[in-house]
Length: 479
Image (tube, one colour):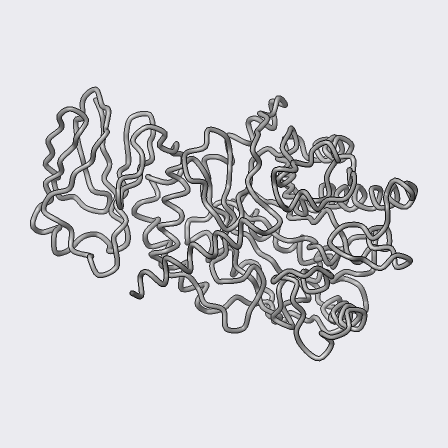
């Protein structure tokens, strides 16, 4: 019964995620720029990354940005003493800038924990939809380095730069999350016309000069990020409703509500960003075309192998942003997500949300340590692999591959940690198998192969004492 409830909860989570503002694009355009192609190939080898949502909203423990959006949606629900009046609420929310002081901020600690977990790249929120900047932009005073913010006196107040430097120094590929909409900007939500939803509060076609000011503001901020913050490998653009009218797909429910063209001139932005950072990956989420170098299903996994670059962004806990009593997924669940995603050709970008003091929950560090223990032994089946587009998932089995080997990954169900004496894999096309081994063990695995079926015989010693109890990886080597 408990497992049924958990399964139902997981399905509801996916349905809820698919109802939100982001889904996988239906089309993909391969890049032509050689530097971008090479960067994309490099990124595709990494498989496992860290995403962090962090801003002033962590002080209230509320959803990132969305509580100031005047829409009747679950994730926009306001709570607290100001919730009955949107104007008072937004004023109080923006006043959080004057109390934000994350004195425990230590990005090197995060980088070390992420590296030990086997993560290879990071994407950090430089600005979410609320417009609060976690970097020292010159375009607005709504930022962590402004004198109104207590943390501005800290020598590490330029948080994005500190995060990028710490992770880059630990060998990570670095990505800048940047929200295209900006609900603090008077050129997006013009106070003359109070906002009704996530879109600009005025008709852009009637006020093109104001929209041009917003486009210039956006351009200038991205120019800062790609000029003054060291090597940036990924520009991860969120807020997919800010898009050209011709890109709106009316078969997608949330895109039907986009009232008009909201182009911010991506060709101009991309040309500038790639002049500043040759080969930078552009991830214009859900806007299919040349500026979406990989697609990003949110809180969900495609049902089948995808033949183009993609990444599932998912939360370690239940929320993108900090929640005081958040519940974290188990290491077993997280490794199952990772192996499922990689087997379908994708990467996992796992979100951890820092708190108002600048620290993660202790449980987040514990999960990363547990994942790292598994990855230290079995990372060969993750990094630099290709997803399986032929064998297909079989019960608890998923598969990845390299030119000379197939990795058969058996995800262990809780309560069934004893390895069976015999294990069978079907639909395996192989010219000739020369060896089967279990990663993390020196025990000899006997096998028989005939007509696409591989039968493994597990030694008695392994049946009671396997290398781990989360997922067993068999390496199948061919001659």
